[in-house]
Amino acid sequence: MCQCRTVEIRYGTAPARWVLLATVLGSGMAMLDATVVNVALAPIGKDFGAQVDGLQWVLTAYLVTLSSLILIGGSLGDRYGRRRIFLLGAAWFTVASVGCAVAPNLPVLIIARAVQGVGGALLVPGSLAIIEASFAPDDRGRAIGMWSGLGGVATAIGPLVGGWLVDAVSWRLIFVLNVPLAVVVALGSRHVPESRDPAAAPRIDVAGAALVAIGLAAVTYALIDGPTGNVDVAVVIGVVGAVALVGFVVVERRTRYPMLPLTLFSSRQFTVANLVTFLVYAALSGVLFLVVVDLEQVLGDSPFVAGAATLPITIIMLCLSSRAGALSQRIGPRLPMTVGPLVMAVGLVLLVRVAPGSGYFADVMPALVVFALGLALTVAPLTTTVLGAVDVGRAGVASGVNNAVARVGGLVAVAVLPPLAGLTGSAYLQPARFSDGFHTAVLVGAGLCAAGGLVAAAGIRNPPRRAGAEDRQAVSCPVDAPPLRPCPDRPVGGR
Image (cartoon, rainbow, N blue to C red; front, side):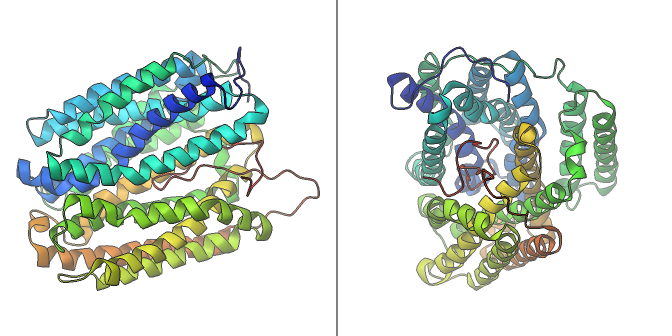
């Protein structure tokens, strides 16, 4: 990848620590708000008298703008300066976070969450791109490894801190938390060198970004509000969304500088891997959305306890993802990508045992541990398969596409799963009704995971081993999405 680099920072120096601090906290803000809001959904609903569809919009408004603009965010950084766009994203995200914190009603909160997603789309791609552009080549692997580890810690502690803040004061503080983080990001960014890509596209695909944002928003509205609102209006809006998405595909085929190069999908391996990504991350996002609410409303857990309940998933991911990547390199990705989603499906089926009166250690934790083992077995091989299916020069955009596919999968699941399971209206305030719907939802999620495993078994092919070929590993596998860029100079399984 062509870089415009004037400074090469050495790992372990003071400038390196400032760059890592700024990038970790910047991406950490977006990671936190992708997970921590789950523990606050029930309190938000009670404060605003919201129905289930309102809670869905609190999540999906963020995901719509984030998933539709994340590729544009990377392009803007490459063209106008990664540090500049990163700082713009941090400021944008912070202002939107304050808007969330002071929102007087649910519609204002939903709008502020959508604005937050725009900031996240500027923050997330720039974070890792800054590290790649700033560090000396032989230090880049260590820097990205540290970024990955610290980002995983941020993902792990987010629900814990958020749950504690909700319990101790108010759900509004989970958004105020971003303000001091942004101040530290701004201070650290003073030490971040600016970088650009001289080969970046001279034009930004504004038409493509607008069409995909309109399409995703309209289809999401139809999926969420259709089952409980005016069906005729929902159908019309859904058709508008579908037309916009078709228009997006047409524009991407014809424009000279597309945000989504459709030629990537000429690779069967790339296409199948992204289909598996969509299915697996749909199940992941949809179930995590509901499991936290189930723990709070059905089992009576506090937001802090409910946030801590999913900690085993993060711990297992941090401990086993690199090992799964190494295993994939030894035996090929087909078997891990087949077995992993099937194990995830077993874990979700075990969640059917969770009902009023269930215990965490006897019923909830075993299911989440099995689910996490399958997820850890899946994610690293999945990401390396996506990256290995394209030329090295296109690895960045391929990984960005995979990230966007994961976000869209989560968006669709959060929109579709609750009404499909009968969780509409005030169902989250009725423990018995919510428990029944939750059982249906986890079985649907299990079906999605099983489908992902079967698709992998049928479509993924183990690449031939070549003597002397260098393996590549994506070293960051956060729970909520695949990494945006690979580390091309670090071997799989490297420490």
